[in-house]
Length: 236
Image 1: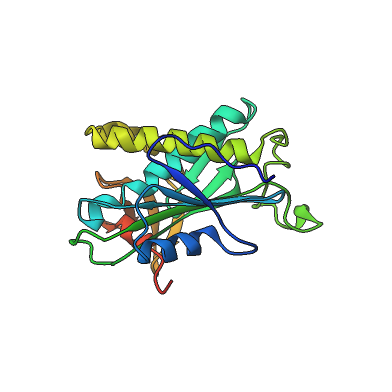
Image 2 (image 1 turned 90 degrees about the horizontal axis):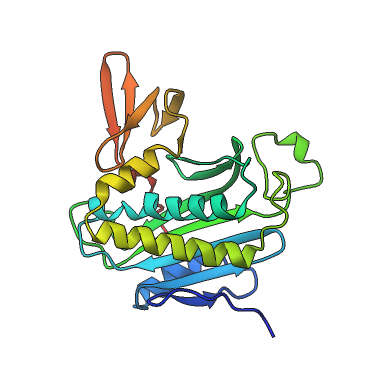
């Protein structure tokens, strides 16, 4: 009998079939009108993938706070289960980093890209590499896996359950008006602040984020703002 993850109340699970991507399945389920709180997942020996369907009651620009909220959830889950010497950080654009190297990524999609409208649904997903990709991991030094970073003892199913619990805690804190605490937590986890980046065809120095978690990009004497909605995937 296949093991099923145990999620907190208000959340439910759906295992993605065969090679289906949980993120794509979650988007399809959301379009079909499935209730919020469904977590579509794929727990394998090589990778863990999951996506949660949300039903925002605020405009998309504000609802995108769920992207960093779910990121904090996976960071907290990895931080709780990994050895204490393993550093877990998040890129503003989505990658999840262990000890500086990319071990996975966050994703987001919504029913609409109208930042001023309340979307019918919002899907936030993540994936984490459990085992090395390919036979020669040394050829991709910026990519890593749980196994390579000394986290071989982490059970992917346990990581999925932990992510759901931590994410729900942060969603509830957001609902209680703790946006400042979420902001402070996330800023402390963001990788690459102060470094040169290229985003949306612009080059500049990543100097931080605004109150809605948008990237502040310094270009000479100018500062540009890239909102989190820039990261939404379209055409799904």
